[in-house]
Image (cartoon, rainbow, N blue to C red):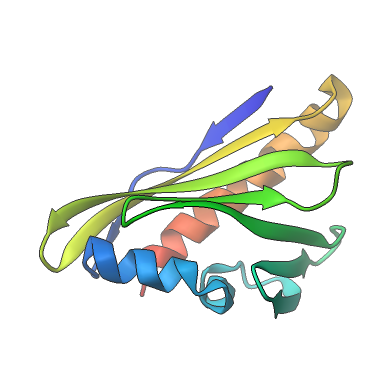
Length: 130
């Protein structure tokens, strides 16, 4: 099992507003890295691809009102979860942290660890810019 986490991001939105922002999956496009080549929302899932990477479809797996959203890989070949935990700081701000949990073979884990860490760090950094 491979577990990664982003640094905590400080967000200038209330916990409730940021939760609402994330549950509207089309908003994830604003958090994506600059090298995004494709982004399509389809119901409770979205498909994206970054330059030089395969397409990945994430499905909304679970929502815990205002403090947790979990996305799951749609493909059975890639078994992983991306969870965002949101903590209220004040009425107008919150902290968010991303947690990646993937079940990869050791070779795959070695190959994807750095790009995945960079990916979740970028999502967190872009959330701070909202």
